Image 1 (cartoon, rainbow, N blue to C red):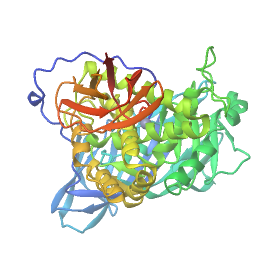
Image 2: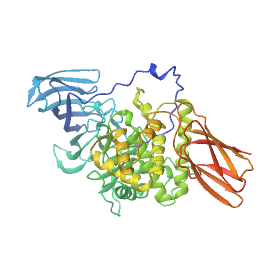
Image 3: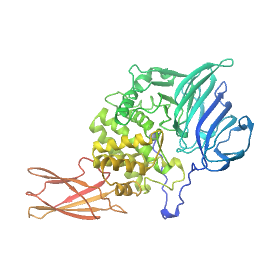
Image 4: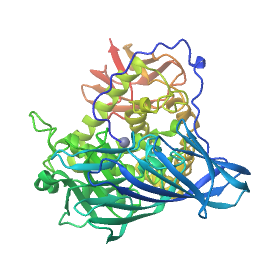
Length: 544
Ligand SMILES: [Zn+2]
């Protein structure tokens, strides 16, 4: 997902980290959803769900009598198993269904929940910018249970089929392949979409409205279509023009595109973009928000650079986040850090090296600003409010972790490791440790210390390099690490310039104070640290 605007971050006063209780996440221990069959009928004006039924195909993992679903405030008409009514209680966002007998591990049961009403959240019922009614799912992080009974945790991935019945004038798009459209009762049509591979609940979506559907002329590696408000029909082709090249680039760099099609939708979302599997929703002002100059424009696509970035980011999520899903919220950087970095890689490819440098530089500034307010690890087990995880740690610092790994392992091993990580965990979940082991396998390097410092610990190196020319054909380099907390052992590239040329050396710090003597014929004219910007560091250099 892409954050719409900078969030105001409250300054939190931490007495100590240990005073915070670890966040509790839903575990997938008693039962696991396999498939959802969701039938939704919307009323004439798309202001409520007139009727719905969700059949949840469940595999039992531990002996149990009760299936505890997450479900919001909609009115439940009945819960059944093989058409027989089951007892249930529904309160505080939980639907507890009591089976008629104990279920054993390995059993498969399919519960059907019939319900109706106006969802409080998750399915956004609103007018589009032309004033036409629309209904658009927007579920991150755990808001899908306001309109579909689910196990609402990203790791509880399942396949899904939607039968959406809406007035005949409406266009409907949802996850996966469009199987068929049938005209039903007077003036209504039912659209059937099936997603055949498991997706996280926050990526389950329907989008209903008076969309103009536009298809690009050039074919991409997957069927690509754009759904925009009628008044933006003429803006869609150019506005979404990066879409096809982005899909093709990631398909070549990572692995084949994971889903049956890709719809790019302009509609209701509280984010700048939301990466629903195969049906991405972008903020309704995507094509107009950047109308006021000065705007940094993409040279290649003629769209604002911000838009290129958000389109590449959400499409990158189809592989990272949607197909390979974070196994816990602490691993969110495997979704957001990857989407941020792979969007930057597309920028590097399409806009050039300078644009890439600018984007990585901006990312470091965002991290430094964030860490001044809150110094916690990327792997954050404490933050309770999941929206607060949409921060510079998971996005920009996550991207930097990948950039540093790429620099330290080399392109060949890095991308081989990423492809292996993707292939091993596609349509499933992954942890930070899974990424570490894939990159270790690809590179033959032990990355325990790197992950311990960059992912499971907080902060970034604040180097101070002092150099002394002692007139004895050597320069003495004193590298001090000023950041609070532990040492960073990452190799530090140093460029020594003299009147006759440049020399590159690499310091391998073993302590927060590290001294190296470098034989040199002439006095340096300047010394630079990390000139190729391969470290997320803040550095000052002083010399005599
Ligand atoms: Zn994202």
